[in-house]
Length: 156
Image (cartoon, rainbow, N blue to C red; front, side):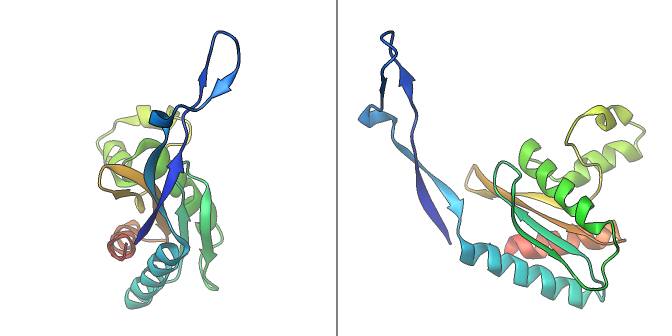
């Protein structure tokens, strides 16, 4: 499902020399290519079942895209929207529908937060309590975006 990658934590001594103590080496889960392709396939299938085309973005925990697809008849702006949703979901570790629901309640303060997307369809991806990335779907219908994103995430 996911691979485990080593994580190193560096310390600086007063002498400015670097060292990595054995106790500082840890591991954390990460998305593998097969996970990404499995989610992308599930997203395409879910979009087809919804009879709609759109954009799919899967990102790493820093919001950097690992997979990007704009389907042939997708709206021109869906790619920018999906990229923003994926970055937002990864950065803020919450689905973008939360910010959208806040906007519907008249809470406009979220509009001033850099990199926060207030469009539904972006989800963070977790393995246990560790975020491993995000997935975002963008079509003209936010409700379908949410459903497709959940279907794709469940493939993980």
